[in-house]
Length: 128
Image 1 (cartoon, one colour):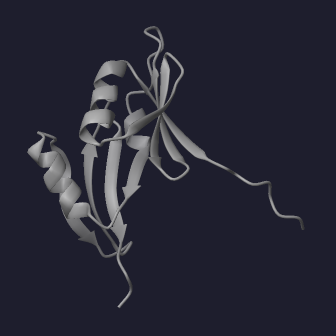
Image 2 (cartoon, one colour):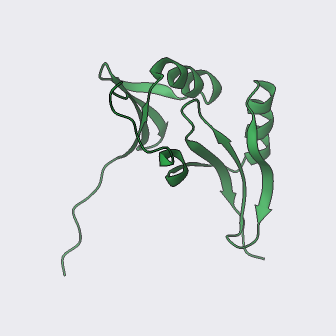
């Protein structure tokens, strides 16, 4: 069996009814840098070849009310506590403070962006 074709990059797209609030959150709070401006969609570098796209949702399209609960945008870092303090100092409210999840052997916290998408900041714990 031949190997699958290569994937060079990965982009997760979020649709928002308030593009400016999302831009402010991801640029000012998380420090993401704009990679590509497509007008109604802006794509930000997250790390390496991982990207986040923010797109203006149509005023007539109403996404399902639970769309935000079916997506988790996870940022992997060794500095979970530092991110928690950094964002808390900037007025970000957390749904769950940093805690150890023994089931998945991760240390993580949760917050939401201005459109209600769930963001997880986590690190993978080493096995003892």
